[in-house]
Length: 406
Image 1 (cartoon, rainbow, N blue to C red):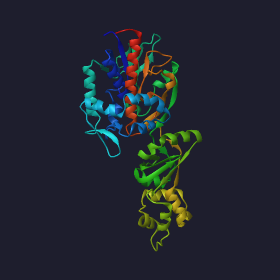
Image 2: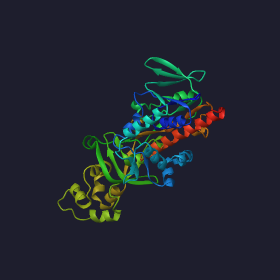
Image 3: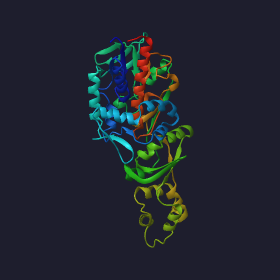
Image 4: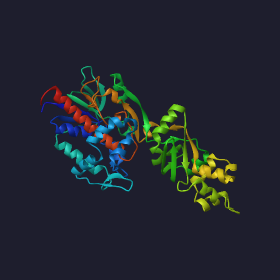
Protein backbone atom coordinates (compact mmCIF):
# COMPACT_ATOMS: atom_id res chain seq x y z
CA UNK A 1 0.00 0.00 0.00
CA UNK A 2 1.95 3.03 -1.22
CA UNK A 3 -0.67 5.76 -1.44
CA UNK A 4 -1.32 7.97 1.58
CA UNK A 5 -4.06 10.38 2.57
CA UNK A 6 -4.32 12.86 5.40
CA UNK A 7 -7.70 13.92 6.70
CA UNK A 8 -7.68 17.06 8.83
CA UNK A 9 -10.74 17.24 11.04
CA UNK A 10 -12.32 14.36 12.96
CA UNK A 11 -16.00 15.22 12.61
CA UNK A 12 -18.59 13.41 10.46
CA UNK A 13 -17.28 14.77 7.14
CA UNK A 14 -13.65 13.94 7.88
CA UNK A 15 -14.36 10.49 9.26
CA UNK A 16 -16.59 9.63 6.32
CA UNK A 17 -13.82 10.68 3.91
CA UNK A 18 -11.40 8.50 5.89
CA UNK A 19 -13.77 5.54 5.65
CA UNK A 20 -14.06 5.86 1.87
CA UNK A 21 -10.32 6.23 1.37
CA UNK A 22 -9.40 3.32 3.63
CA UNK A 23 -11.89 1.16 1.76
CA UNK A 24 -10.09 2.09 -1.46
CA UNK A 25 -6.76 0.70 -0.33
CA UNK A 26 -5.22 3.98 0.82
CA UNK A 27 -3.26 4.49 4.04
CA UNK A 28 -5.23 7.10 5.98
CA UNK A 29 -4.24 9.29 8.92
CA UNK A 30 -6.75 11.56 10.63
CA UNK A 31 -5.51 14.66 12.45
CA UNK A 32 -7.57 16.72 14.88
CA UNK A 33 -6.70 19.62 17.17
CA UNK A 34 -8.91 18.43 20.03
CA UNK A 35 -8.30 15.78 22.67
CA UNK A 36 -10.91 13.45 21.16
CA UNK A 37 -12.73 13.07 17.86
CA UNK A 38 -16.25 14.19 17.00
CA UNK A 39 -16.59 16.74 19.81
CA UNK A 40 -19.26 18.86 18.12
CA UNK A 41 -21.03 15.73 16.88
CA UNK A 42 -21.24 14.42 20.44
CA UNK A 43 -22.52 17.70 21.84
CA UNK A 44 -25.14 17.93 19.08
CA UNK A 45 -26.39 14.53 20.22
CA UNK A 46 -26.40 15.30 23.92
CA UNK A 47 -30.14 15.89 24.01
CA UNK A 48 -30.96 13.51 21.16
CA UNK A 49 -28.96 13.06 17.96
CA UNK A 50 -31.05 14.30 15.04
CA UNK A 51 -29.22 12.32 12.39
CA UNK A 52 -31.36 13.12 9.33
CA UNK A 53 -34.96 13.70 8.21
CA UNK A 54 -37.54 11.37 6.68
CA UNK A 55 -39.32 13.83 4.37
CA UNK A 56 -39.45 13.11 0.61
CA UNK A 57 -36.24 13.79 -1.30
CA UNK A 58 -37.72 16.61 -3.40
CA UNK A 59 -38.64 18.53 -0.26
CA UNK A 60 -35.44 17.52 1.53
CA UNK A 61 -33.17 19.12 -1.08
CA UNK A 62 -35.02 22.44 -0.95
CA UNK A 63 -33.63 22.92 2.56
CA UNK A 64 -30.25 23.87 1.05
CA UNK A 65 -31.57 27.05 -0.57
CA UNK A 66 -29.38 28.53 -3.28
CA UNK A 67 -26.80 25.76 -2.83
CA UNK A 68 -29.28 23.03 -3.68
CA UNK A 69 -27.66 22.43 -7.08
CA UNK A 70 -24.31 21.74 -5.39
CA UNK A 71 -25.60 19.59 -2.53
CA UNK A 72 -28.26 17.59 -4.39
CA UNK A 73 -25.86 15.35 -6.40
CA UNK A 74 -24.12 14.32 -3.17
CA UNK A 75 -27.44 13.53 -1.50
CA UNK A 76 -28.56 11.46 -4.48
CA UNK A 77 -25.52 9.28 -3.88
CA UNK A 78 -25.73 9.28 -0.08
CA UNK A 79 -28.85 10.81 1.42
CA UNK A 80 -31.15 10.14 4.35
CA UNK A 81 -31.96 6.52 3.47
CA UNK A 82 -28.33 5.62 2.85
CA UNK A 83 -27.28 7.31 6.09
CA UNK A 84 -29.81 5.29 8.06
CA UNK A 85 -28.59 2.07 6.43
CA UNK A 86 -24.99 3.04 7.16
CA UNK A 87 -25.89 3.50 10.85
CA UNK A 88 -27.68 0.14 10.83
CA UNK A 89 -24.54 -1.53 9.52
CA UNK A 90 -22.71 -0.10 12.54
CA UNK A 91 -25.31 -1.72 14.80
CA UNK A 92 -27.31 1.45 15.46
CA UNK A 93 -30.99 1.33 14.53
CA UNK A 94 -32.88 4.55 13.88
CA UNK A 95 -36.50 5.65 14.17
CA UNK A 96 -38.65 8.47 12.79
CA UNK A 97 -40.00 10.87 15.39
CA UNK A 98 -43.39 12.57 15.26
CA UNK A 99 -41.86 15.59 13.48
CA UNK A 100 -40.32 13.41 10.78
CA UNK A 101 -36.85 13.81 12.25
CA UNK A 102 -34.70 10.67 12.43
CA UNK A 103 -32.91 9.66 15.63
CA UNK A 104 -30.86 6.66 16.74
CA UNK A 105 -32.67 4.29 19.06
CA UNK A 106 -31.23 5.36 22.39
CA UNK A 107 -30.98 8.94 21.05
CA UNK A 108 -27.27 9.37 21.80
CA UNK A 109 -24.37 10.05 19.45
CA UNK A 110 -21.71 8.24 21.49
CA UNK A 111 -22.65 4.61 20.63
CA UNK A 112 -22.61 5.46 16.93
CA UNK A 113 -19.27 7.25 17.15
CA UNK A 114 -17.68 4.43 19.18
CA UNK A 115 -18.79 1.79 16.68
CA UNK A 116 -17.58 3.93 13.78
CA UNK A 117 -14.15 4.58 15.27
CA UNK A 118 -13.77 0.88 15.99
CA UNK A 119 -14.50 0.06 12.36
CA UNK A 120 -12.08 2.73 11.13
CA UNK A 121 -9.39 1.38 13.43
CA UNK A 122 -9.98 -2.09 12.01
CA UNK A 123 -9.52 -0.65 8.53
CA UNK A 124 -6.11 0.70 9.49
CA UNK A 125 -7.06 4.36 9.93
CA UNK A 126 -4.75 6.04 12.44
CA UNK A 127 -5.95 9.04 14.46
CA UNK A 128 -3.67 11.75 15.81
CA UNK A 129 -5.09 14.10 18.45
CA UNK A 130 -3.86 17.48 19.68
CA UNK A 131 -2.46 18.24 16.23
CA UNK A 132 -3.44 21.75 15.11
CA UNK A 133 -2.98 22.33 11.41
CA UNK A 134 -0.93 25.46 10.62
CA UNK A 135 -0.87 25.37 6.81
CA UNK A 136 1.66 24.31 4.21
CA UNK A 137 5.34 24.67 3.57
CA UNK A 138 6.58 25.72 0.13
CA UNK A 139 6.82 22.06 -0.94
CA UNK A 140 3.16 21.52 0.07
CA UNK A 141 4.07 19.46 3.11
CA UNK A 142 1.73 20.03 6.04
CA UNK A 143 2.63 21.80 9.26
CA UNK A 144 1.08 20.73 12.56
CA UNK A 145 1.49 22.34 15.96
CA UNK A 146 1.73 19.73 18.74
CA UNK A 147 2.78 19.61 22.38
CA UNK A 148 6.09 18.21 21.14
CA UNK A 149 6.67 21.07 18.73
CA UNK A 150 5.97 21.44 15.03
CA UNK A 151 5.58 18.34 12.90
CA UNK A 152 5.89 18.20 9.12
CA UNK A 153 3.78 15.56 7.35
CA UNK A 154 3.46 14.63 3.68
CA UNK A 155 0.73 12.73 1.84
CA UNK A 156 -0.49 12.11 -1.68
CA UNK A 157 -3.89 13.69 -1.03
CA UNK A 158 -5.33 15.85 1.73
CA UNK A 159 -8.95 16.15 2.83
CA UNK A 160 -9.80 19.30 4.78
CA UNK A 161 -12.88 18.89 6.98
CA UNK A 162 -12.26 21.66 9.48
CA UNK A 163 -15.83 22.70 10.23
CA UNK A 164 -17.27 26.19 10.16
CA UNK A 165 -16.87 28.98 12.68
CA UNK A 166 -19.37 28.19 15.42
CA UNK A 167 -18.59 26.54 18.76
CA UNK A 168 -14.89 27.30 18.60
CA UNK A 169 -14.31 25.59 21.94
CA UNK A 170 -15.06 22.28 20.18
CA UNK A 171 -12.53 22.88 17.41
CA UNK A 172 -14.52 24.75 14.72
CA UNK A 173 -12.81 28.13 15.03
CA UNK A 174 -12.72 29.13 11.35
CA UNK A 175 -8.97 29.88 11.54
CA UNK A 176 -8.48 28.02 8.26
CA UNK A 177 -10.22 30.80 6.28
CA UNK A 178 -7.09 32.97 6.27
CA UNK A 179 -4.84 30.03 5.34
CA UNK A 180 -6.97 29.07 2.34
CA UNK A 181 -7.40 32.68 1.25
CA UNK A 182 -3.62 33.02 1.18
CA UNK A 183 -3.34 30.24 -1.40
CA UNK A 184 -5.97 31.86 -3.59
CA UNK A 185 -9.00 29.76 -2.69
CA UNK A 186 -12.34 31.55 -2.79
CA UNK A 187 -13.67 31.85 0.76
CA UNK A 188 -16.99 33.53 1.52
CA UNK A 189 -17.02 35.22 4.92
CA UNK A 190 -18.34 33.00 7.69
CA UNK A 191 -21.70 34.11 9.06
CA UNK A 192 -23.91 32.81 11.89
CA UNK A 193 -26.61 30.34 10.81
CA UNK A 194 -29.35 28.76 12.91
CA UNK A 195 -28.73 31.59 15.32
CA UNK A 196 -30.51 33.87 17.76
CA UNK A 197 -30.92 37.63 17.39
CA UNK A 198 -30.53 40.72 19.53
CA UNK A 199 -33.67 42.68 20.41
CA UNK A 200 -33.77 45.95 22.36
CA UNK A 201 -36.02 44.77 25.16
CA UNK A 202 -37.21 46.96 28.01
CA UNK A 203 -35.72 46.35 31.44
CA UNK A 204 -39.01 44.70 32.41
CA UNK A 205 -38.76 42.03 29.71
CA UNK A 206 -35.08 41.43 30.45
CA UNK A 207 -35.65 41.02 34.17
CA UNK A 208 -38.88 39.03 34.20
CA UNK A 209 -38.92 36.93 31.04
CA UNK A 210 -35.31 35.91 30.35
CA UNK A 211 -35.49 32.21 29.48
CA UNK A 212 -39.26 32.17 29.01
CA UNK A 213 -40.62 29.94 26.23
CA UNK A 214 -42.98 31.49 23.72
CA UNK A 215 -45.21 28.60 22.63
CA UNK A 216 -47.96 28.05 20.06
CA UNK A 217 -47.09 31.07 17.95
CA UNK A 218 -46.48 31.58 14.25
CA UNK A 219 -43.65 33.66 12.81
CA UNK A 220 -43.84 35.40 9.47
CA UNK A 221 -41.00 37.03 7.59
CA UNK A 222 -41.25 37.71 3.89
CA UNK A 223 -42.77 34.61 2.31
CA UNK A 224 -42.01 32.44 5.35
CA UNK A 225 -44.84 31.57 7.73
CA UNK A 226 -44.22 28.85 10.29
CA UNK A 227 -45.67 27.77 13.62
CA UNK A 228 -43.60 26.63 16.56
CA UNK A 229 -41.92 28.04 19.63
CA UNK A 230 -38.79 29.84 20.74
CA UNK A 231 -37.18 31.35 23.83
CA UNK A 232 -37.08 34.95 24.99
CA UNK A 233 -33.63 35.87 26.36
CA UNK A 234 -32.34 38.99 28.05
CA UNK A 235 -30.53 39.84 24.81
CA UNK A 236 -33.25 38.89 22.33
CA UNK A 237 -34.63 35.58 21.10
CA UNK A 238 -33.38 32.12 20.19
CA UNK A 239 -34.75 28.64 19.55
CA UNK A 240 -36.34 26.51 16.88
CA UNK A 241 -38.77 28.94 15.26
CA UNK A 242 -36.17 31.73 15.19
CA UNK A 243 -33.51 29.38 13.80
CA UNK A 244 -35.85 28.29 11.00
CA UNK A 245 -36.00 31.86 9.71
CA UNK A 246 -32.47 32.91 10.64
CA UNK A 247 -30.88 32.89 7.18
CA UNK A 248 -33.22 35.40 5.47
CA UNK A 249 -33.45 37.50 8.65
CA UNK A 250 -29.65 37.64 8.94
CA UNK A 251 -29.25 38.59 5.29
CA UNK A 252 -31.78 41.41 5.59
CA UNK A 253 -30.07 42.76 8.68
CA UNK A 254 -26.73 42.76 6.87
CA UNK A 255 -28.29 44.48 3.86
CA UNK A 256 -30.54 47.00 5.60
CA UNK A 257 -29.24 47.32 9.16
CA UNK A 258 -32.27 45.68 10.76
CA UNK A 259 -35.23 43.38 10.19
CA UNK A 260 -38.77 43.01 11.49
CA UNK A 261 -40.48 39.70 12.16
CA UNK A 262 -44.20 39.36 12.84
CA UNK A 263 -45.69 37.09 15.48
CA UNK A 264 -49.17 35.60 15.48
CA UNK A 265 -50.20 34.79 19.05
CA UNK A 266 -53.43 33.09 17.96
CA UNK A 267 -52.62 31.13 14.78
CA UNK A 268 -55.72 28.96 15.18
CA UNK A 269 -58.10 31.96 15.19
CA UNK A 270 -59.00 34.58 12.62
CA UNK A 271 -58.82 38.30 13.25
CA UNK A 272 -62.61 38.46 13.12
CA UNK A 273 -62.94 35.79 15.79
CA UNK A 274 -60.58 37.75 18.00
CA UNK A 275 -62.51 40.98 17.52
CA UNK A 276 -65.72 39.23 18.50
CA UNK A 277 -64.21 37.86 21.70
CA UNK A 278 -62.39 41.07 22.61
CA UNK A 279 -65.56 43.14 22.10
CA UNK A 280 -67.38 41.35 24.87
CA UNK A 281 -67.82 43.48 28.01
CA UNK A 282 -65.08 42.83 30.53
CA UNK A 283 -66.84 44.41 33.47
CA UNK A 284 -64.52 44.93 36.40
CA UNK A 285 -61.89 42.57 35.02
CA UNK A 286 -58.49 44.02 34.20
CA UNK A 287 -57.30 43.88 30.59
CA UNK A 288 -54.86 41.14 31.56
CA UNK A 289 -57.68 39.05 33.03
CA UNK A 290 -59.85 39.79 30.00
CA UNK A 291 -57.18 38.56 27.59
CA UNK A 292 -56.63 35.41 29.61
CA UNK A 293 -60.36 34.73 30.04
CA UNK A 294 -61.38 35.31 26.43
CA UNK A 295 -58.28 34.27 24.45
CA UNK A 296 -56.06 32.35 26.86
CA UNK A 297 -53.31 34.95 26.43
CA UNK A 298 -51.13 35.54 29.48
CA UNK A 299 -47.57 35.87 30.72
CA UNK A 300 -44.92 36.60 28.13
CA UNK A 301 -47.40 37.01 25.27
CA UNK A 302 -49.26 39.79 27.06
CA UNK A 303 -45.94 41.34 28.12
CA UNK A 304 -44.82 41.48 24.50
CA UNK A 305 -48.06 43.16 23.49
CA UNK A 306 -47.43 45.81 26.14
CA UNK A 307 -43.84 46.09 24.89
CA UNK A 308 -44.79 47.14 21.38
CA UNK A 309 -48.30 48.62 21.32
CA UNK A 310 -49.92 51.59 23.04
CA UNK A 311 -52.65 51.85 25.68
CA UNK A 312 -54.97 53.22 22.99
CA UNK A 313 -54.38 50.04 20.94
CA UNK A 314 -55.40 47.93 23.92
CA UNK A 315 -58.61 49.91 24.21
CA UNK A 316 -59.58 49.27 20.58
CA UNK A 317 -60.72 45.69 19.93
CA UNK A 318 -60.01 45.84 16.21
CA UNK A 319 -56.50 47.24 16.57
CA UNK A 320 -55.68 44.89 19.45
CA UNK A 321 -56.86 41.88 17.40
CA UNK A 322 -54.69 43.04 14.49
CA UNK A 323 -51.61 43.16 16.73
CA UNK A 324 -52.36 39.78 18.31
CA UNK A 325 -52.38 38.35 14.78
CA UNK A 326 -49.37 40.31 13.55
CA UNK A 327 -47.16 41.85 16.23
CA UNK A 328 -44.01 43.48 14.76
CA UNK A 329 -40.77 42.62 16.56
CA UNK A 330 -37.68 44.56 15.38
CA UNK A 331 -34.42 42.58 15.36
CA UNK A 332 -31.11 44.41 15.63
CA UNK A 333 -28.36 41.89 14.87
CA UNK A 334 -27.58 38.17 14.80
CA UNK A 335 -25.96 36.78 17.91
CA UNK A 336 -22.19 36.21 17.59
CA UNK A 337 -20.96 33.49 15.23
CA UNK A 338 -19.49 31.41 18.04
CA UNK A 339 -22.96 31.08 19.64
CA UNK A 340 -24.62 29.88 16.45
CA UNK A 341 -25.50 26.24 15.88
CA UNK A 342 -23.82 26.36 12.48
CA UNK A 343 -22.26 28.82 10.06
CA UNK A 344 -22.85 29.95 6.51
CA UNK A 345 -20.04 30.89 4.14
CA UNK A 346 -16.79 29.04 3.60
CA UNK A 347 -14.94 27.61 0.61
CA UNK A 348 -16.88 28.55 -2.51
CA UNK A 349 -17.92 25.79 -4.87
CA UNK A 350 -16.44 27.83 -7.71
CA UNK A 351 -13.03 27.19 -6.12
CA UNK A 352 -13.61 23.44 -6.30
CA UNK A 353 -13.91 20.99 -9.16
CA UNK A 354 -16.58 18.30 -9.41
CA UNK A 355 -14.56 16.13 -7.01
CA UNK A 356 -14.41 18.88 -4.33
CA UNK A 357 -10.71 19.42 -5.06
CA UNK A 358 -9.29 22.94 -4.93
CA UNK A 359 -8.80 24.04 -8.53
CA UNK A 360 -5.67 26.08 -7.88
CA UNK A 361 -4.18 23.75 -5.27
CA UNK A 362 -4.40 20.17 -6.60
CA UNK A 363 -4.61 17.13 -4.34
CA UNK A 364 -6.40 19.11 -1.60
CA UNK A 365 -10.12 18.44 -1.10
CA UNK A 366 -12.68 20.17 1.12
CA UNK A 367 -15.79 18.76 2.80
CA UNK A 368 -18.41 19.40 5.45
CA UNK A 369 -19.41 22.66 7.04
CA UNK A 370 -16.32 24.48 5.76
CA UNK A 371 -17.99 24.52 2.33
CA UNK A 372 -20.17 27.50 1.42
CA UNK A 373 -23.65 26.17 2.18
CA UNK A 374 -26.14 26.24 5.02
CA UNK A 375 -29.30 24.43 6.06
CA UNK A 376 -31.79 24.55 8.92
CA UNK A 377 -31.69 22.21 11.88
CA UNK A 378 -33.68 19.01 11.53
CA UNK A 379 -31.00 16.59 10.36
CA UNK A 380 -30.13 18.49 7.18
CA UNK A 381 -26.80 19.77 8.48
CA UNK A 382 -25.48 16.37 9.51
CA UNK A 383 -26.72 14.63 6.38
CA UNK A 384 -24.86 17.03 4.10
CA UNK A 385 -21.71 16.77 6.22
CA UNK A 386 -21.70 12.97 5.92
CA UNK A 387 -22.57 13.16 2.23
CA UNK A 388 -19.93 15.74 1.30
CA UNK A 389 -17.26 13.85 3.26
CA UNK A 390 -18.11 10.75 1.29
CA UNK A 391 -18.02 12.72 -1.98
CA UNK A 392 -14.61 14.19 -1.14
CA UNK A 393 -13.30 10.73 -0.25
CA UNK A 394 -14.34 9.30 -3.59
CA UNK A 395 -13.04 12.41 -5.34
CA UNK A 396 -9.63 11.85 -3.74
CA UNK A 397 -9.68 8.19 -4.80
CA UNK A 398 -10.38 9.19 -8.39
CA UNK A 399 -7.53 11.68 -8.23
CA UNK A 400 -5.11 9.02 -7.01
CA UNK A 401 -6.23 6.53 -9.64
CA UNK A 402 -5.83 9.11 -12.40
CA UNK A 403 -2.22 9.67 -11.39
CA UNK A 404 -1.14 6.05 -11.28
CA UNK A 405 -2.50 2.54 -10.91
CA UNK A 406 -2.35 1.15 -7.38
